[in-house]
Every structure is written in structure tokens, then in C-alpha cells.
Length: 439
Ligand code: PHE
Image 1 (cartoon, rainbow, N blue to C red):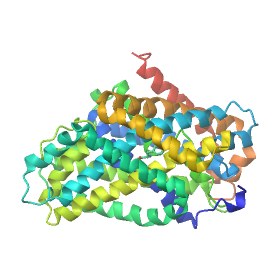
Image 2: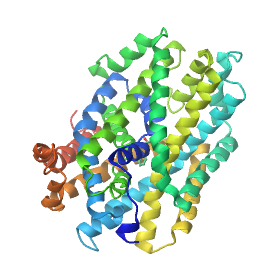
Image 3: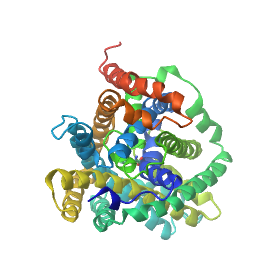
Image 4: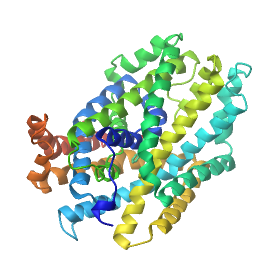
């Protein structure tokens, strides 16, 4: 395929919304609250925000820059910038491994949304259902592997069908509607949350500093969440960058993506924790947090059924746009490296993810291992390598051209030292801290 028929984003806003659509997904609305809840809330949030700024943003700029400069997939990009047998191709390989692991459990969680849409249609969020019953829905779902496998199968089939048909170009239009709608529904839910008795408790949980909760695990989890949420460290954002037009600005586009992604996670946090405290849900309840807490709130809303169904439909749609970018990384790798047929690759490897995902539906432990290994280890190592590549191997002129003659010209030095030193050192420090070196 030549560069001219790869297609490009329609406008800068188009890129921002499409890339934000790829980044915004279950990571913001399902994972962020549950990981924050398990890691002490405010301590986690503070570290998370600091890492987004000093680690996430520079690496995001690096990935988008590498994609834009080469207009290639994650493996091809490193070959093009270095040489055919470049060891940096490893990044592409690790990214594919991460994509397999993430897509497998991601699809199971997305499948949970389908159940909550169906339950909504059956009237679970109407005021006539009891709050106790709606809280039990999640436990009932997770104790039924067959139901979870069915939904997981439906979700992964949808993802495969889109990648197979190559209609990603339509993605931009979907994201242009999806992102604003998601923000609107979250704001509406915040207004509801503000009126609940748990509002202050929820806000305090997220904002009141408590250094005692700042453990090595909290810091590691915050780093993992930073990369997971921004889709970094595995080439997904590099792929998005490869569709940028020459005149598009890498720095401001990346900054916007980071702002939208973080903003949506924060909105979700300020919706969920007040509701968690109002309904007496345990903040550290784990992966079921959103599914146990929100349905109870929908029951109290005047148009609860519509709000609830609408919410889970939007979440499902946001999950699809992220899942596509995961499968896309896998597909691009095999098509490029092994000259395999794109359609066969999407079906074959999508099916493999379906099989691995069955393990997640059956065993919470297996789920946890895939979730933690990918976010907390594979993505950070990938991000570390990408940032070193951009800082030390990539020709300076290429990197500089994305800053030169823009209002960000003065920030080039800061970005360069971030990807050369700050980001790699931070990742290593977080790992060493986790290993107990600083005790
Ligand atoms: N960032 C996505 C989310 O928050 C998940 C994802 C991770 C997608 C890595 C692609 C690559 O849901």
C-alpha cells in the first residue's frame, strides 16, 4: 500500500477526536475508578496526574511523532527510522504481545456492558426494581461463565468485523459523536452525584491528601493506569499518528488527547465515588465497582432506564473504538512482518483472543494476571523503549520539525530531556521502588 491511499484524518479536530476515541474506553470509566478505589483514592490520583504530565504526555508526543514521520505501522516505523534488522523492532513485537493480553480481558469486560444493556431493557433501572436486586446483577453475571463467554464472543466478533471490513475510516465520524455524548452523560451524572449524601465523602476520597496510602504498589498501579488509559507503550498511538497530515501539529494534538482522556477519567471518578459512598459500596470492590454502583443510581433518576441503557451503550461504543486499535496493532504486525492476509489475520488472531478471554471469564485470577502484567509491566517497558528511541536514536531534525515554527518551539528542549532522561528514569524508579530498593 502506498502512502497516498492510506487515508488521512479529515481535520485536526478529526484526529484529536479519533485518537481520543481510541484512548478513551473502559480504561477511563471502568478501570480508572476501580484501580483508584483499590489504591487509596487521593494518593493514587495525585501520582496519576503527575505521571500523565511527566511521563504520559512526552511519550504520547513521541509515539504520535514516530507515526507521523514514518506513516508506517509500529514495526515498520522502527525499521524505516533505523534499519531493516533494527533491534528496536522488539518494541513492535512486545506491543503485539500486550495487545493480545489486553484485548482478551478487555473484550470480557466490554461483554459485561452488553448484559447491563439487556438488564436495563428488562427494567432493572426502573424505580420499581429493588436496589438490592440491581446490586446483585454483577455477582450473578460473573458466576455464569457461559453468559460471559457469549457476550465476550459477541463483542470480539464486532471488533473483528470492523477490522476485517477495513471500515476504520468511518471511525472518525463515530468518535465525533461519541466523545461529546460521553462527556454530556458524565456531566449529567455528576449533577446527580452532587445531590447525593455521599458527594462530600466521594470528593474527599479523591482529593484529601493522605501520604500513608502512598505505597510502592499504588505508584506502580498509577503508572500502569497512565499508560493503559492513554493507549501508550505498544504502538497504538503510533498508528494513529501515522494518519496525521503534514500540516497537523503533533504537540498540540497530543496534548488535547491527553486532556480529554484524563478529563473523562476524572469525570468518571467524580461520578462514581460519591455514588459508591451513597449506596454503601466498598470503594476497593475491584473490577465490578462501576457495575455494582451505577445501576443503583440509575434507579433513582427520573429517566433511569433510558439513562442507564444510554450509558452502557456509550461505554460499549467507546470500548469498541479502543478494541479496534488493539486488534489493528496485531493485524498490522502480521501483515507487515509475515506478509499475511489482513482478513485472515483479523479473524485468526481475533479468535485467539476469544480463546484467551475464555480463561478470563472463568478465572478471576487469570483475568488479574493478564490485566496487571500488561498494564504494569509490558506497557511501561514499551513506553520506556519508545521514549529512548525518540530521544536518542531518532534524528534530531525530525523531532524538532514538529516543534519548530509552532507556538511550542520553546518546549522542544523540555520534551527532549523528558524522553531522554525524565521518562526512562521515572519508569525505572517506579520498578525499583516496587522491588523494595528504597525501603
Ligand atoms: N486506552 C484504552 C482504554 O482506556 C485501552 C487501550 C490500551 C487501547 C492500550 C489500546 C492500547 O480503554
